[in-house]
Amino acid sequence: MPLPSPGDAPPGAPWRPLAADPRFHFALRRPHARGRPAPTGLLVAVHDSTRDVASLVRAFAPLADRHGLLLLAPHFPKSPRGDGEEDGYKRLQEGPLRYDRLLHAMIDQAAAEAGAPRACITRFCLYGYSGGAQFAHRYLWLWPERLHAVVVGAPGEVTLPDPHAAWWAGVADTAARFGRRVDVAAAARVPVKLLIGERDTETHEIKPQPPSRLWARAEQRRGSDRQDRIACLHAALQALGSPVSLEVMPGVAHGSGNAAALARATGFFERQLAQKSNAVANPK
Image 1: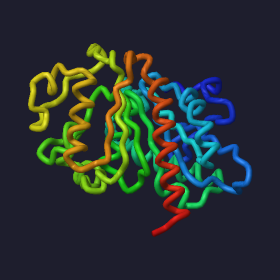
Image 2: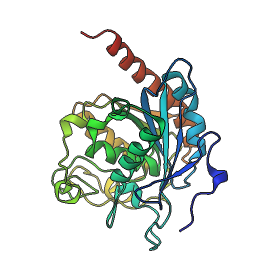
Image 3: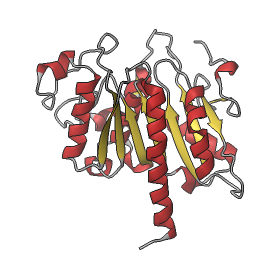
Image 4: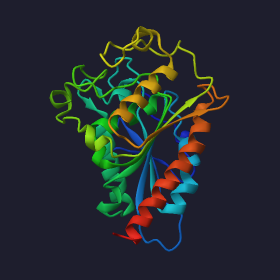
């Protein structure tokens, strides 16, 4: 299993091996902000299938500095079990591997290294595009209480809160699979921004969806593109009462979408963090 190259790590955020499982690494950047003795928050950015972590850290560094955030970007390698599987992280589980737990171990290790108080990492902002978006919205279903806000950009496959369909199409068996039942009311309280490129219509890289009663049309279940799939996720979140928004990025295709999504995610997180700061400064 190839380890991430040192040259792939962004400046100021060298790779850290995960102490609990050295097959996995993460980039960690401390905020460069004056007057803050310790970080005051956390932003996690999950890579897509290209595993380009450096671009995520570079894009979010100014936001992290303004708000005193630790910036953590996991590196989930291809085929960590030597079986050729490259996409297990997107669905949070791959045999005995639990990618949500791996992220939690990374967060705990990062906080200890940075001297961050526990309150700093209790809830965090989460970003993912394409494969990272699959991780991000599935993490939302399982761990909403740990999230301050989420940006989900152009996932190729989506999980809907269908209590009659098994994971990953739905959430019927999460108690048996993950030891956690999905709390849809808690998930609906997390601010979510969905992003999709206007020209993101290719289907050669995405797989057919498994059947679900919430995917009523055949093209949504089998031949749909990312437009249809994110629309299904948007509708499902809206039905729960979520403060979700869906933005179509004009002229953007899938391959160029991450850069456009990062710019919009920065603005979204900026607003959410400002609201959090105002709430702390002006409690009711």
